[in-house]
Amino acid sequence: MFCVSLAKTKINQVCEQIEKFSEITDLFEIRVDSLENPSKDEILKVFFYPFRFIFTLRTYREGGKAQVSPQSYADWILWALQQPFYLVDVEWRYLKKYYKLFDLTNSFYDKILVSYHNFNRTPEKGYLKRMLCEMGDKGVIKAKIVTMAKVFEDSLRLLDLIRFAKELGIELITFGMGDAGSLSRVLCLLAGSPFTYVAPSKEETVAPGQIDLLTAKTIYSNLLDHLPKPS
Image 1 (cartoon, one colour):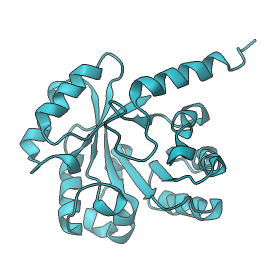
Image 2 (tube, helix red, strand yellow; image 1 turned 180 degrees about the vertical axis):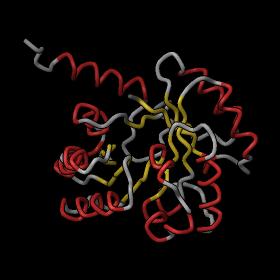
Image 3 (cartoon, one colour; image 1 turned 90 degrees about the vertical axis):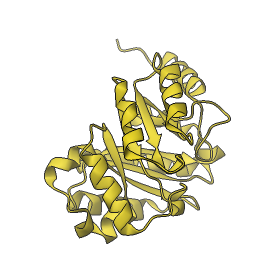
């Protein structure tokens, strides 16, 4: 339910954080783009732990640190898909433009999380719905849409996409960035997202408005306490 984003520079630091939070969650995002000179053998050390891991090589254009060629990006993705990662994040702009380069088979789609980020604004609902339809046409069954929320209504527009995506057969994680989007990072769980992304601490956020794990759990518990109890 809560995926902790681990954006350390060394894999041993990543492992230390896995151990630290393993009693609270079993889902971790490994931000490979944050590692210094990432080594595939080193990355595989995380599988010493019996938890679920998301492989993310976030490019500079989408808020990460990786500056790689399309071929290098595809090579990393295809390697990760062969490993026991729970999910492999694939940026939508790459998948759409270089679809043939990835040489994907249907057997991979259950572990691909196609992601779209917009750090400037939240597009209109029609644009986002068309994007989801296009993803569905490409066989996508798990997606992540995260955009900058200037006002709280932007977050509501994103949360409203979850039900639409479900009608297309897509499991969607979506919330807003920035101060106006912070609460939607927890509300998306109540709206139907399978999990949300949180930071290890308030000092280790990887995106604007990201909440730390303990704060997110507290907000979520408080929201549940105020929901009507089933009769």
